[in-house]
Amino acid sequence: MLRKLAQSKWFDLLGVAIVVGISIGSGYLTEMLSNVTHWGPWTAFVPFGVISIINSILSIYSTRLTGRMENLGNVIGIINVVLSGTIDYILGNKAAIITYPVTFIIYTFAINKWMKTEKYKASRPLTGKKKWLTMVTILVLSFAFSFGTNLIGWSDGYKQLLFWIVVVAFALSLTANVLNAMKLTVQWQYWFIYDFVQLLKAIVQGNFANTGKYIYYIINSIAALYFWKKPILNQKTA
Image (cartoon, rainbow, N blue to C red; front, side, top):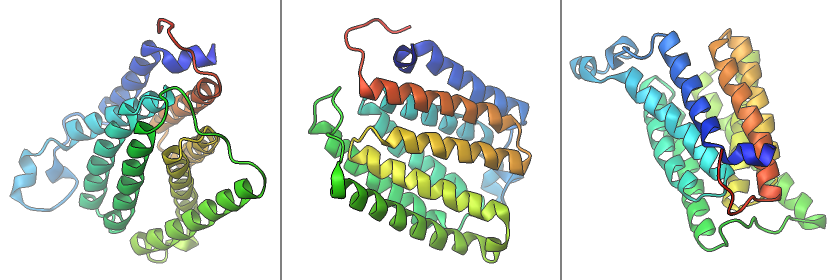
């Protein structure tokens, strides 16, 4: 059932409905860029809310298509990274100029790797010393990079609980993205943890509207994990 859920187009639409519903409920639909930043009079003509909603929908489909082993998910992911990075930078995240280009590069490697492999076949799992050496290296570098770049944006934020949640979340996303670029199934276990941390972040921030979104992503990560372990081929999607 979980593997079929990974293929379900109805579940795709449920994700879209959740993010659009959250955006409308939060008042983002009619939000203009001038309401959230002061970059000049031209911002009054930029529909920030609509762009944010489109970006959220792209994120949903990138995740869902990647979960179905469709390389198109990585292509959409690159577009999503460009939009997300631009939005974050405009909103004042100084570290965005460093973090998002790194994610962009990782996605380019993912697209290239997936093009050279069989469509519904993941890379052979790492084993033994190679597995632990690779995973520890990726995790250490990801956490070090996450901590350093977040210090740029947070200054003395290391004194706050939210700072550490953000550091952990970004490090996990980097790790999962690298594993995705290697086309390894284990990435979905990291996406599960990442989504759970993001759920905690939403609760800490009091952003209860986002809790539904990350519960959706948690379910999706479980479904994608089962699909990657045993893809369902030549079956009609729900």
